[in-house]
Length: 161
Ligand code: FES
Ligand code: FES
Image 1 (tube, protein in one colour):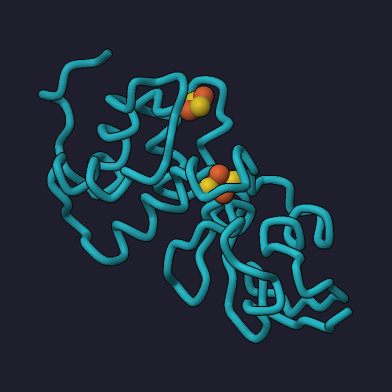
Image 2: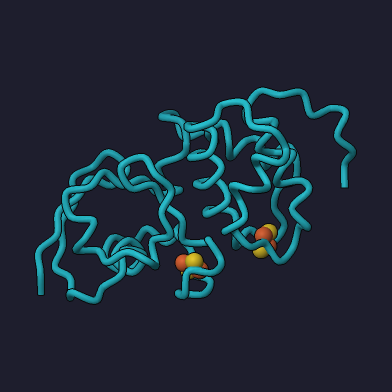
């Protein structure tokens, strides 16, 4: 077992992990942060995306030990300090960017990482960036609309679906 320490959503945390423990497992089972979803464990679906040192990472592709010392943010860390939904979360709600919600934590984390890199993305930029996030429900249209709205762009001319 290896001791890991990291900052998760602004708090210092530590735990004992096996070398093969995935970051997704450490977050969910070690820290109880079950907002990070695991849909495949094989790097396909993107439900497990978190931020590691500000970059979107599929947490099922990273060993917890390799995240030791890192600054990690999960969906639980995306709300505003007063507990209200953060900008990207609110846009998903406002524009019906979710149905069952399984993919949503990963979508929100990927979208937030995109907007940090590219504050005014085009529709093509959003579709391209979210290519690694699979949604079985929405057909993606409203997710893309929500991300554009979260960037402050006028989405009133984009048809509802
Ligand atoms: S659970 Fe990590 S990509 Fe699907
Ligand atoms: S909302 Fe159901 S998988 Fe995306």
